[in-house]
Image 1 (cartoon, each protein chain N blue to C red):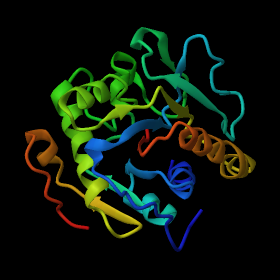
Image 2 (cartoon, rainbow over the protein chains, first blue to last red):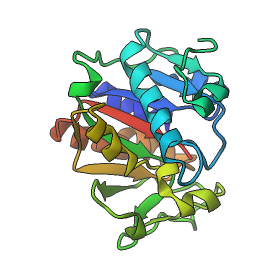
Image 3 (tube, helix red, strand yellow):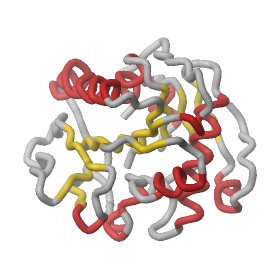
Length: 92
Length: 140
């Protein structure tokens, strides 16, 4: 996915992605990514959990605006998404 | 594949003023479209165009390399096609592109070259022609 993201960013569109593996994302180095412990097959929460799905998307939009350094992977405490709290990063 | 640097497109306006498109590698496609090729162990580097107003009942996942049991119940968890309308309605974004794009995320060997040189740049060009400002990419 990072390869596709790089192509879209290359053409001048700002992109952000959900990372399922910090190790792989760290190698492909997309411009902006967020890791919050999503599992394979469920990158955006669970089926029919509408408010949680929206929280995840808002988190992505927040970091789309805030990330200033290319190649940044924001590491979020997954409980932040669970609780719908302001998603301060656990680490970068 | 490993890179030493990252591409960068500066976002020069608020997200609330942006047109958004979604890209997934979850193997989502319309029931009327050809499925991704599961017979090739190196994957399928092609993509499918997903109309933004496609109903969930018209979407299906063809991807044998992850468990999409949950996504089959609600495709929004890999392609949040309904949730972006919630974002627009709430004013988080200005608009939704009329189409999103879907790939299959198991692409290996010679197909990586096709992805990098052909299909991914083709999608990027289409998004640019649609005047998309921002894109969210979701794996599966």
